[in-house]
Length: 346
Image (cartoon, rainbow, N blue to C red; front, side):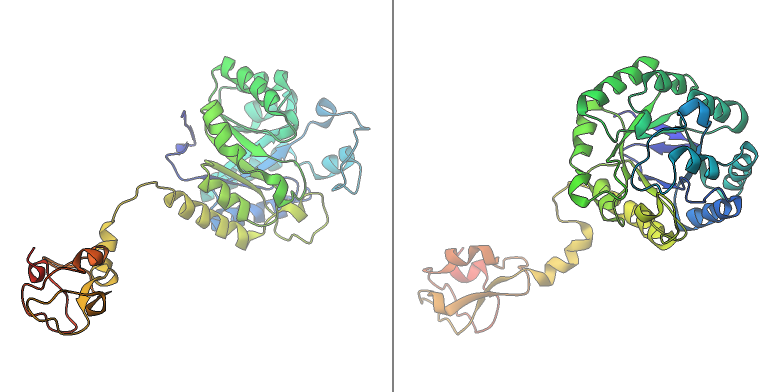
């Protein structure tokens, strides 16, 4: 599976999940809140914090409809919360100073151009609404940076088409499985799509998660997600379209830690590990006598049992209890001791 770099950080199945704190418009257009979100995301251990850049008249008509999570018209909400180029540059400089990647989503060719020429990003995150916008996908791919493309609100055939478009550009990319519901019910998350994408497309696959809490994000890592994007808010009770489907700083910290832990736990080797060997010595059982057994006696079921500790040299393991019953004792066997193979003439 092809992987790629974001600011020198490898992204792919052989590397810890790349965790993106999606600030979206949860800063409500207030640069002070946006700056605070950067600090909290870095402290929580996220790899990146992602903002949005809108050139509204290039991306939508003023009468575009709104979904139920918006209280005000979509255009007005985005206009009110849109950060300026200067503010984005301030946030990017802060990210670089404290050591977290600055990412930003463009929603049109004009915003992609601004990110390329005036701000600069190490990679482009493309939202689900633009997944089937092939002209924009080609335009962003032409910037020569890796792309992370969300696939909410699509059928599998549409994802196939977008992948074909991206492959033709030669630009490295990842896909994130996504269900564009805010918040997304657990029974709509469909984490099983992640391994399907991985096998079908052979690129890094992630989850852009809109469900409540961090459970499904951690489950996604167990299924191979290389990228986790999660809406992030300083206070989930604030008004706004995305707060209810967001996690707060403490949850983001648990997500970053948990994603790494689950990734480390994904191995598929079935063996006795070195850390287990000292436990084997007391945790496994061996065949023991439960009463005195005289030399020459036929060993019956009431004479033997299985107890800890584990077999040592010449000791009979618990799995061979049935092989002992019916044998003739080759020597006197005292009560309450491990039975040796030599005790039954083997």
